[in-house]
Length: 278
Image (cartoon, rainbow, N blue to C red; front, side):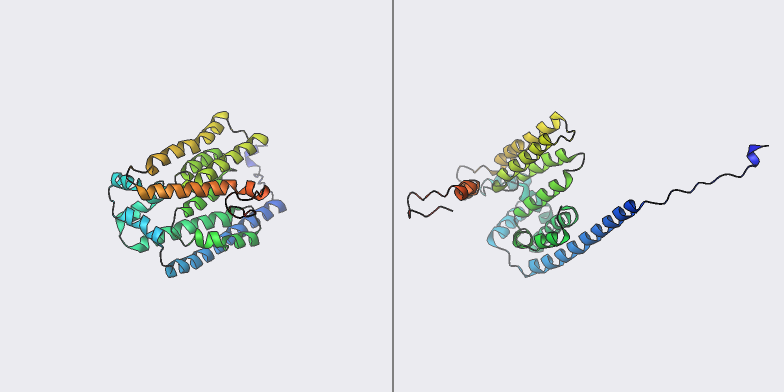
């Protein structure tokens, strides 16, 4: 008998398992939750920014990028500010399009909403915890409304943490750490602590990362610090920049010594006997 005359046998694909259905349904629910949460955050922060009168330091950064169209002039001006250049670089492009203060507020809104979207979608917390986190004081006001470089610290940090589980996680860590050191002087220990924590975790639980990748991630904050030094080092006659860096160093010393002062509450030396210098 000719096999060509035989009817073709059609095999149907096996039905999806209940586990796959539940996984796909859970991912869909998570995406929907992230969209709704981010939309609500965007509306609230947009209203707060609209009602917020910018503070002096917000206006200072905008005035610098607005009035220095030449990037070399901008870098020269920053030597009188005592701040790294990343926040000014972000603002410099929209300042070339318009002189309106609304551009500053729009950039701030976009960065804050972007960070909220990352947290809402990828933070390893319950939905209620993610909502509480995004509506707490710092994400909603300090990093959401006030147009300062701290917003970049928040956005870069949550983005790095979201990308860590991926194959290029250490590359994201290296790039994020280098960027963090160029946001504000206060973020330098944060960049080093984040890098050290991830590398220690990868050493305890090997993930297949090469030694070169780990070394690159470890060196990234140092490279970022060098770039930040080139842009933030005060000019010889920059009194304001020197005061700014001195204040940042004082705040850094206070922050870094907080665990020791909390665990070992030594009495103050020059004030009241039991007063602790917080």
